[in-house]
Length: 195
Image (cartoon, rainbow, N blue to C red; front, side, top):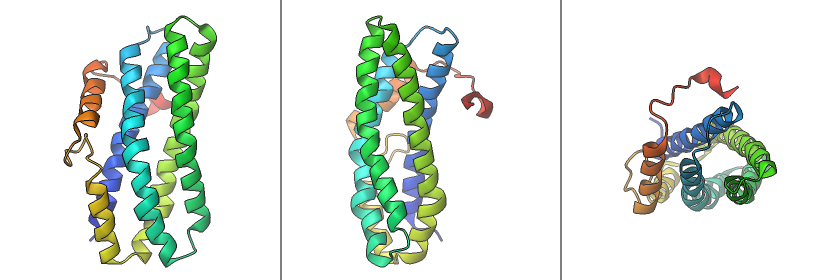
């Protein structure tokens, strides 16, 4: 049986992926001429800052990565890469917020910069999530004890995932619900729309 922490982490990754997917979808539609939904774009960026950057990534660094480091040197290079990507994400989101404000004010160069940065950020995060799930988590599952997994699960349960109802924090829940309420319904995209 898989440790509870793995399911919590995968559920959090799914929530983050859904928000990233919405961001990429909106950018794709705006490139085709759709009117920008600035309220939804701001809500997406606020969610990314409040949830992955403030809750998810720090718990991975402090509990999951540290536990694996104590057990094996096998994942050292991968952990260094994942931690570096955690640090890269926050400045990219800050750039997205800055470009979005200028874009909303009518700056065409900021519009293009927002699109390009959104694409780079989403790609970085998806590659990051895939590396964690496909490469890192199998190593962690192999080397960590039940006790270590229990400690990691306890830490991640405090993340209050708003999508999966794990003791939702009010701020993240409000942001996620705002994204849902502002998103086109149905969004009408499939797997091929991300290309």
